[in-house]
Length: 319
Picture 1 (cartoon, rainbow, N blue to C red):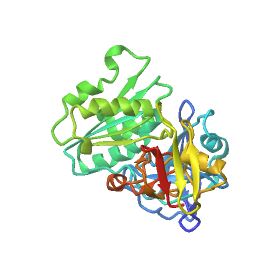
Picture 2 (cartoon, one colour):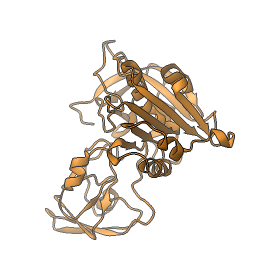
Picture 3 (cartoon, helix red, strand yellow):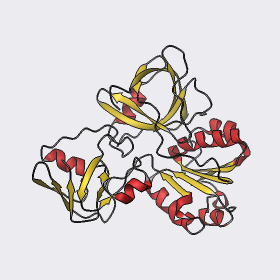
Picture 4 (cartoon, helix red, strand yellow):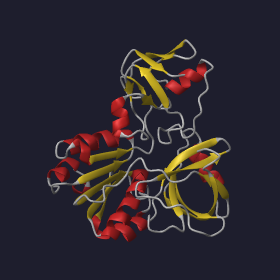
């Protein structure tokens, strides 16, 4: 989020919508319409001076009067969600960036399968609203630990109605989501959209891949994992500086560069905003962002140091 495109909004309403989850209605200071957004979009929110985080918009794209975001408080995280929960109350003025969409909806698909894990339901709600407005066929499945932890149930009922199904870890076995069986019965041309924790996403990807083409499976994590099990150490070479920096397993490129005294411009640090995107001169990036398009990833000439790694022992960056 840059100073040029950021703008101030007011918190019109705060709702507690599940255990540790609050939803916020953001409106323009002058009461006018906000910039339009498309289903699946997110905004960057300045949670503290100099610190931003990305949150999906879960409201109706047809309603320009407000943006709606929902935030899960994670006390063991980097402090962004805690700051939001402690600071944001009705009447508070905050700064946000314009809506951006790294998780777009294919509105022409004959059927859409929306699958969320916990707070990952937020971008899917805006998709459900859009699909309902278009009269398109869709179904929404939300997986949560308990009913008390399931966010935005009232919103889900209002938008998706009988097309939404809640699956609870502590519920009877027969109501738990069998995604492989569900995928096997999907109509031709279905597009699937999945958002949630990393483990949930990987399980969903595996199940859906048996029934749907790769191009019809769309993923967005609300907390991209910068480090995965089995990560290998590698070296980043900064071509302009003539400097080699070791990136151990368990450490991001951004962190390793910072330890070497090289500070990059960053914002969300989640691989969503693209502020830290950097040219790659040699090597093969391991893309873990949600900013680059599939074509950009395939070219391999840009990577996001905040969350992406390297598939080769040496990665040369234009820094």
